Length: 220
Image (cartoon, rainbow, N blue to C red; front, side):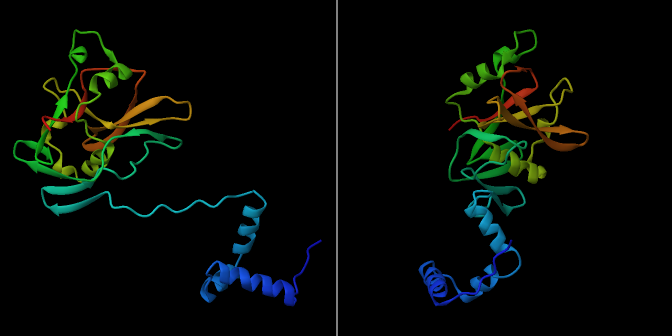
């Protein structure tokens, strides 16, 4: 059976003190008392729901000119799939990403596509976790640059599409590593398929082949 409130002096004063203590405005009280918002608050009190703070909106990249953008390296990277979480993320501050005649540059350092000797055709393929160890300490790029390039495909060098054998190149951004609910690790990649740039990911337990390249800086 539902109970109907008829606030007396005591409950009304208690509610008034709570409003003042929490800095509520008349407009906020109007919002709270409209619709079904109070029923949602009751669910929180009953432990059936929880309040999650909204993260502040953060710019991921901004345009400087037709060939240059600034990328927020420290922003929380986008997730590759539902249930994924960030296992590690290298990078902070803003970086200048520029397309020049001879390739792509980040903070005036040229971006190269690193290939492990163990990935060369004819050699033993390398597992992703072994490649991760090999790349430790190298100036690899993170996934925020991947997403900025995906949003600005005119900045991506033409030779990133395919190698000399006409194989699709998968450009991995090892500065951001993710894991699924079972703890399996993966890295995201940029690739040109079906006449358009796309994004994918690969698991570290898998074999990494010749077209699987790491975006890195030539020198720092």
